[in-house]
Length: 337
Image 1 (cartoon, rainbow, N blue to C red):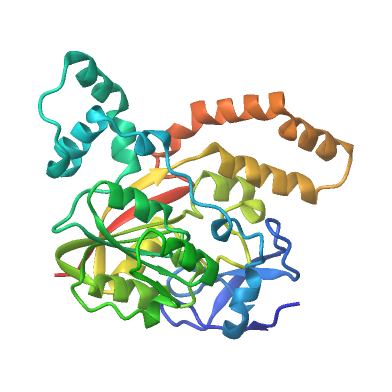
Image 2: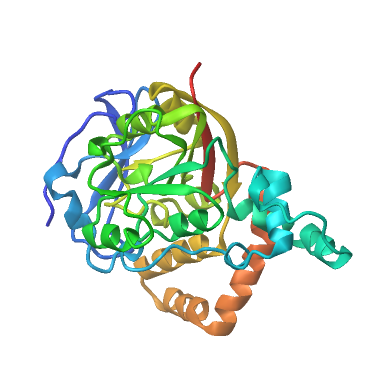
């Protein structure tokens, strides 16, 4: 059993909070039960009590997926042809990749695949200096390096950091608060599914903003506890992932976080993926007793049943994006002033 400690709200420092529920670790089975609370002042949802600071690494067993396999990179991003480079040049500012005029067939492919290319990449900023906080094994850095970025990374897991150094030697192994990068060193700082793991998200985001050169931006992506999955599945929502996710953000609390760190949210893109909801459904079915739950789990796990469920979600989930109910949200944050 991991040792827990009481904390104040990581966003506003308030000591009073309402306990919503306790839950076990459905994803990886770390022993114990962990409480989700809501801050009485700012409304932030966070884990309290949480694992003691000196034991946080014990919440990440050897089979923790981000430390054992690379994050997914879409096929359209991995197989950029002239049509894809044209999209990057014309829509996202990668002028150095512009292939010039293309045959009609290639221009038609641009019309078909353009949206997917834009979703897979980040916009070009300034001189193209990128820092990825929580870079894992460096696959995203490698992709960005292939289209012209000068990349650096921060990774707390030693084995993942060693793998990331095969992409670039500029990888700091350790806590982002201890990273030695000078202020103004980067045009873009990214953190994908990282802030929710951090004991001090305000301090880390403040550092990320401080590393920006003039005109630079921060891009962060976090689970959205106020999205479809959180509303439907509650304590079984896969995005909770207690005890590893110390904080749960909504668009409102992410806006407060940006302000306290010295920035402001200038754009937010809601994202949906069927696997998040399917995983949540499995967690719920695993916790219920009886033949009905077992039968439903069998159907979900079966190739045919799982395929039908995934197809239905792929057809219906896109409506969550314009309704601001995505399973995750990607935020663009600029320094204040």
